[in-house]
Length: 380
Image (cartoon, rainbow, N blue to C red; front, side, top):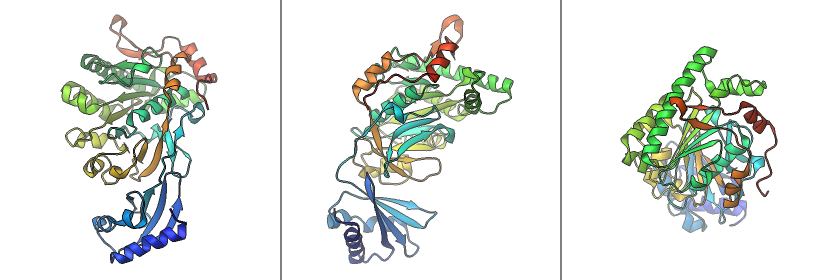
């Protein structure tokens, strides 16, 4: 591509050639993922008119199809033109901070991007085949395992992505419909148990109680430490089991205060699957490349994800509603397989004596595993 002034001039020439007096190209900023052009609104108009006027821009400027996002606070639009090459962002243990933040990749300015669990919302992850959805799930799990202090439940109906985590302390996996339904019933049981603990300790939020306890060096609330429920391919699961769908809807509406966060992933963001109940409770959205603008609108509420380049190139929409472009991190298979040699975090679903809840097998080992340095199991 050309220099900043040349590109701005070309874009402005195109806007003038199409008799577009609605916006004016004023700024251009290069990032590791996009070239960001600021379009100042000249007069009130419908956003769809601006989108239509930009259809021929890639042919004129000779670039990838741009992604148009709005910034209501500044009264301007952002035009994101993807770079010719996709930047590879590698995961390593230094990226993992604490259990309240999940590392997922890099922003356009090169800084690390984290999912903040203190946002209090569940996460919806969508992307077509080849978009990097499965790799992003692995990145999240590796970040959680590296930071420690978080229980993970991974429900994988296709049984492909979760195999590497079977037998690892700190991760509970389930595959078949019966296993998944049984696990969801157990989760609902200990969510109710956590509410009982919160009532005894006069605490309104289990995660806040655990963070305060962990920061002060006490382990009074160890039984209510944060738990992440990851469910892959919800479209297949919802079609095969109405019981599983109902359980997930119940958990999504009442589990936040109990310290449970749910991450739903699908490669088919159909309106029948992602309905109003899902959208209401899953206000943090991650959308990778979709197969159509309709799918993008279902997940994000706006078009644009269909123009992403794939392989981890995505858009994050936190509860605030602002779109954040990012590049998902890559975790190599050797890193995932070597995770089984790490020290256990001690987490199991206890099925003995009918006590269906998440318990600690050895609190001393848990505390030691969280305070010691994590072994160097990733090549930096």
